[in-house]
Amino acid sequence: MPEDLAGKRVLDIGTWDGWFAMEMARRGAEVVAIDRWENPRFYEIRDLLGLDVEYRLLSVYDLDPASLGLFDIVLFMGVLYHLKHPLLALEKVASVARDFVAVESFVLKDRHRPGLGVEEHALMEFYEHDELGGNLDNWVAPSVPCLMALCRTAGFARVHLNAVHEYGAAVTCYRKWQAVTPARQVSAPPIRLFAAFHFDNGGVNFRSSSSDDYVTCRVSPEIGELTSADVFPEVGGYGAQPVFGGMAEGQGQVNFKLPPGLAPGWHQVRLRTAAGESNSLEIAVDVPLATAGLEVKALADGVTWEPSIASLRNGFLAVWVSGLPRNADIANVHVDIAGKWQKPVFLGAAGEDGVAQLNVALNPRTPVGESTLRLRFAGTEAPLFRLELTA
Image (tube, rainbow, N blue to C red; front, top):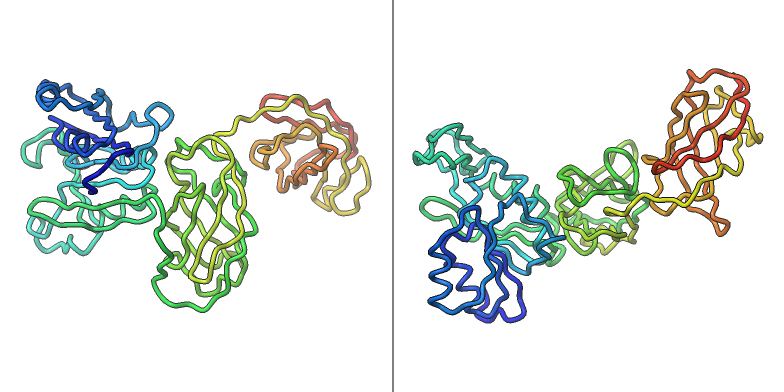
């Protein structure tokens, strides 16, 4: 920790009587200290030292960059094993960290559970009652590999083991990649990024508050023998550990967790390897869904392009729509014909005339004949458009 912290913001989580918070303030940092319990000793020590430290009663689960802002350094020491939801807590901690987080926790060791080899495996023991030290608020004990895996899974790009001491371990968790350091030397050209979308729904919209928003990147097949250890994803400048990297359904693919704490807006996604940096694509994070109005301009069979008609045998319908915003996607545009839902499979960017092409896979159970198409987005519905559906 640098001796001079002037110009840095520091958050001390579970500050207790404020020892670390006061030391950070003594070094010149702007410090916010939080705890669930209001400790009178904190006030006494702060007054005796004459230091300016902001003290708040907050749970780790209440951490939110929208209300607290971001911190260059976060101290999260002696807290993790007191929590029933350690992974969720680490995600919350990551969301308010700009640079790095110091994490220290009680850890499970072989002397606690002989014969399990816990020091080599990502294991965690859960305590339903007061089994750990007779304390009712000691809930978990991760092994050292588990502690590091939890930190990476929570959204940190790099996790460095600093020390293993008598009862616990200390790690430093970084939000950004320092340098590309592949696990092995693999000869491959730079990756080309073709698509970046939500793992669950295929759209471009993500929620910064979600624990389970994962990004899927489709990349050039030149990924070859690259694995998740050789690829370094970034969103908005923050790194993320890939959970998968390789070939899937004949295409190169990389999956990773959306980094916590991204500000609302459009963020660039890129991948780095030892061969260089990919091109970038954008995804929307907490961007409101809104439109001033929708209108279906035209539609046609997706194979023959015959206007105002579609064939269930051909299976696809092309619809041209005006009024869809940039963050409209196949997950939030809804289409039905004769009351039957039709699956959007592609939405192109709007042209200069504001019209975008939407392709849908036709529901084979839709009744044939004269019918109407209904299109909705963000609570707004376009006027009904007539079409003929054939077998």
